[in-house]
Length: 563
Image (cartoon, rainbow, N blue to C red; front, side, top):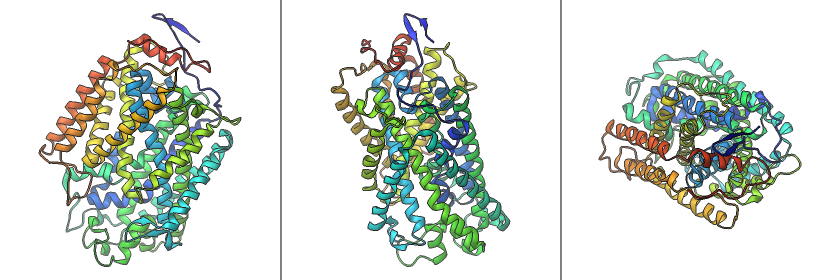
């Protein structure tokens, strides 16, 4: 249905060729299987190593943060239920110049998750097949690398199934993935030692609040929560998206938050107290010399090892089996999401139009093949789970930052648009969500931030080349993206002068000139300035609606005029 508004027909963007075959359970489990991946297998250990007993608090804080970001995505996805939504909302709100940046980070985040999950698979599988993973170098071996490629190929093959069949496969996997952590929580809580949360030699929060905030990205906590946006990525294939999509996002985040917080409590509580002579932060293998057997086992497979140490051997075997299934399910759905993001980028006319092609099952097959090929490149420079997490967390948060910006812009551009779900107190929560996203980027550290800057430049070059050969490319809306380079460069400068390196402690790349607390105050103030600047320079209503209408069906409209 279209209505006239300021001379432009208002329509809803339509995804050509995709089939709406995903119900509420399927949509919820698409997000849930992304949340409960390798993060639950390793996040609890890394968080305990980083901040001791305060790791539980870190999961609670991260859960609150993610819920606020998820509410933004819930409104956007229900309002414009298009596949690859995270790559398309900023395009509608601010035009192509800003849209390219957020769209590329959406793709980078999606395409790199499958390799991460494969590495987690190999690390746990090394218990039965030691030659897959080198515990000393913390890298997969040559054999593990080859099997990782095979596993990624399987993800792609399964994704060629029609969505209704794929959803059934994913639902079965996800029921298992949710049931096993819940079982682990219930069993490990029977082995609870309250004193483990505050060992005598280190207390509850070694490193203080500075370490606590740094652990959110560095320990993989934010990474573990990532994936709630999968319902947005598959929005073009969800039945009754106005109802089912926001429900799927909100339900999946609430389930994930409860599971992760309780897992951390169960993990720390079930550790044998005798193992904590050096505290929770001492559960690391030394750089030189022999690693104690129990500590080495914890680092190879944290939950399976703690179950074995607690005398619950049968649970350890179930957890090791789950360590194959859980990352595989997440890798599978992220391969799905990657193809939908590339589909969305093609609909934006940032990617070649071949990425928008679908087969008779409604599957974007070109995007699937490229998800496999490009994923292989990310296997090369980052050969372990932990080394990938910081970079991908940064890419995720930069992608997430586009949601509150887009929500705020749409509230001003099309206040009368149909919103099946409206985020409460959006005028307050949207800028807060943007501040939080910027703080997470800052806490990731300067080494991660500058690498993300390099990745972004490559993205603009690649998409610029693609768009140069597309006669129907959208206009370059420079005026509506004037705040973007200031935002990115400003975050880089704050990070450089701030307290978090994001790299080796022995050789920090940041200066530390900006003191603790002042750094976060500066980041928050800077974020608010950028947010309201972006709101002031967003696309005018007519031009925003023109971009939406260009994706209203199979026939593309001619290029919109520059403003």
